[in-house]
Amino acid sequence: MRLRQSGIIGFAVCAAIFQSSAAPQTDSETRAREYMQFLVQELDQWTRDFPQAYNMALVRPPVDAAGLSENAKAGADNLRAAIVRLTELSRANDVRTNPAFHAQLEKAVAAAAPMNAALAAQKFPEAIQSDWQTIRTTLNSLAEICKTTELAIIEAPGPGSAPVKDAKTVAANIPAGAITGYVVDQRCALRGKAMWVNAQCVLTCVRDGDKVVLVSEDGKVMQISNQEKIEAESYGQKVAITGKTAGDVITVATLQIL
Image 1: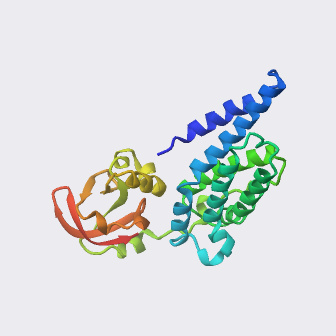
Image 2: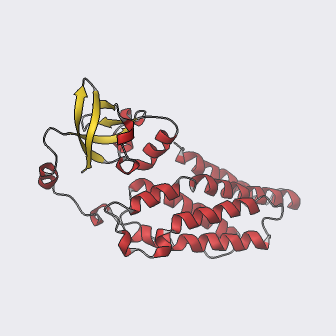
Image 3: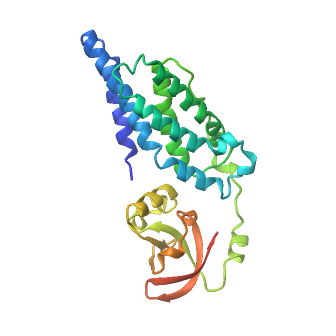
């Protein structure tokens, strides 16, 4: 997992360096270039896993992909491709005035714009919205320096905008004898409910070699013997699982997202 605070602190420190006028002109230009390169590096890191999380969210409620434009649906992949090229161009010593870098930055902003609107129009998972705010802020910081178009700051839908499932309906749909809980990685299972519903965090930890487990509302953790039965779309979701249990181990027969 990345630590979001480190990026915020880094922005503050580098911004102070960039705005300093006490240093000689040549040194100031060097620091300004390094600050821009730092911002691009941040974009590169934050957009590596973002497309997979965004694309995963498109195929499950409450997001309605049918109501989005093709550019909005492809926005995360298009932005990532633009950032990869921007990272290559940022290595130039004249990055502040380099026409190719400025043109690529405009392409990145244009690729992000439809997705920015989609994230404001529909209720995407909180983790995706949070990561997007960091990406958008960083992209806009570069756009401001280069005096080009910035992404609009549009608020994401509030909690009340997502359809709420009736508790009785959910309970009625749970198979007889099923065990309910959240699909989460082993490490984050002990870190509280905020981490149980963070699908992006689960995805990252599993990718790093951790196993998924089922954690109940009261924090009881059950190991899953047949990991291959757990699809990524269930990460961070509340589910109902049927299967054979032996102590704190369950062998999954069926899994239903609630």
